[in-house]
Image (tube, rainbow, N blue to C red; front, side):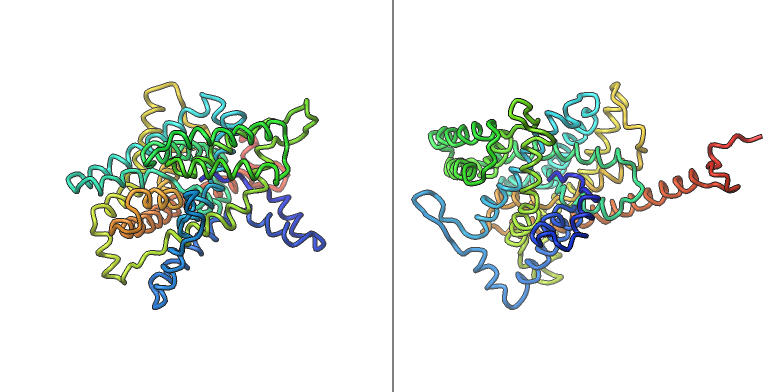
Length: 437
């Protein structure tokens, strides 16, 4: 999912103030991309270790522990509370980011957005096609996982980019962010239309009432949490009961929030969408997404033989091939095709090898891929465990390959910067700008 650039100056200033409240320092740390990615990785590792330890029964017992009120269709296991409840926070932030990009960001300008938008579409279509080809003839159940490798985990992808990037072009990050926004939008549509069941139209219509109340409140720029939370929770509960996956409610609520500051209401600076995102980002990155990963990534692999057996499943093979090969071909191939057949152009600051590294990085599928795997097969299917192993293996492979390419490019741009700043005669003017006899 999309992560906003960190604010290093603000973070450094906050961390340097010993009198600053501890919880505020922590929230600033949680807004850093590398920290969010690291927490996700730690939660995943913890789940895998526990699920494959002698105490595995305790892990699965905790994951399957049911809590809630059945008459309201809310008697769910802790694993489902994480995927249907906590992940709604993640998708609420996605909705805020999507709307902001369409209103005031890169997606507002067609000329700037057309190349990464096309790349995102290709990065969804080609992996789905490769997965389907690998699983052709394997039965309807296997084919239900066609959408698993279509999503890019922007938290992991940007964390990898943040670790590597010291001299890479800013245009590379902008391209990845725009691609991820469209990727999120497509993933939300796929979940809503292909992975919802038992639709209850009356409950879905009823959800419009609290959604309308929430919309009125935010349009009036009311930011009081105890006024906004009840209609938001009611919207989520009714969407969940209607048969539509509850995370879609988070997106709808995010779309309701105004992006631009209202001069009529005396607002200055950032709009309400950015303000809410800034407040909720630590909750999402530091708690909601890691807890979801903890309950979703725990699969009993069964040692090396179990790992090899899992990857022998055509479902797993299709996921790995789609993430590593499909995403790369989809993103890079579509970008090349669009720039060669239309008037659209690649940003001047990017080389094609940069796009290749970014296309590999787009193969890091995790959060939404795990969610779609659960929706595709359910915890009782053998394919569910195999799919999760494949998501981890494919994502790790894509991340390592992307890191190799982008690290080489980072070294190249660092050498260029040194050459541009070289001043052999010490006159204060770089040699590049001095006239030669």
